Image (cartoon, rainbow, N blue to C red; front, top):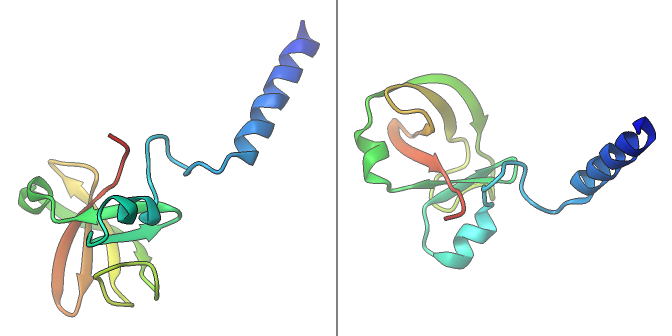
Length: 113
């Protein structure tokens, strides 16, 4: 029985390691978002896309928490290189703040419908 269990776990690990899917279940990358909407305001961190222009995210009562990234060339469609991205704390989780040129814009993680 233990041998079968070890075999099954080994197969699952191998399948997970060989997968081309994004890291987070239900998540999408920037290319997938742009295939649906070529004009989308999106950036990507670690193969995970974040989209802007979501009304509830703009209105949510949140505060900047830890910095999670600084965007470099090719990581965003509308944000400039050097934009700093922060996680947030507050009433809504899953809102991210992009700071650039003295401005602030909010984004959420893109997921499959």
